[in-house]
Image 1 (cartoon, one colour):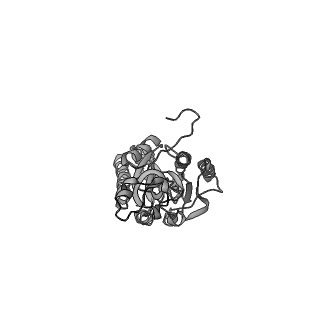
Image 2: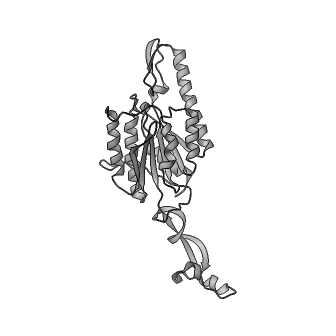
Image 3: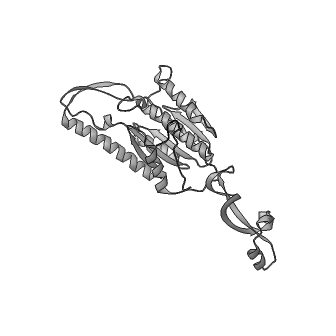
Length: 292
């Protein structure tokens, strides 16, 4: 737990070697000033006589001087993509948009501490330009995103139906490989989710499913209940009974299992955050999978 008054921070690691030319905190494939030994090369290629390797130079049959070459540590773009469709405004045991705002603050703080640029992309039926924040190294980027998300509760900021904009995400992401967090309730067509992940294959994708226990555990009492489609807002009067509640709960579990399988097929990770965000659990996920 952070100390009172200390901003929350999401700690993360990457398993792959970065390719960015800008110095940062992650292992990379780029040669430069660093402590990750890459090998020895002729002085004509390395051009830094301060790193002369006496052993390699003395054993070269042609008498060429050799120098040691190292890899620098580079920065990695970190992007938060959020499904901001109408279902994300569901108010149950938690408020999903508040969780997205909290996640933006914590991820932005973690990126700033590591020298990584942080960006944000929000979408519903399409990617909205007013919800796009290009990656930049900034201490206050997450707070800016959180303030903008606060306007979604107003009539002017009301979002559209569906999350087809996920298919457009790749166009708004950096050309180099990025660490991408996708926050959604995944109330979308399974084929749409599959196609979205396929288009994001270049990037390291971590899907965070924002679940609500009110959806997982519908009331098991007998009686009439008014149910609403979270995307369209259409309502339906049904006669609730324990058997129907059990089938609804099973359908929710099947939906999450299917999303897990889709994520694995495309090399993505899927984490479930129910009712709240456990930033420590997210950090343990990155610790378990290794990397820098």
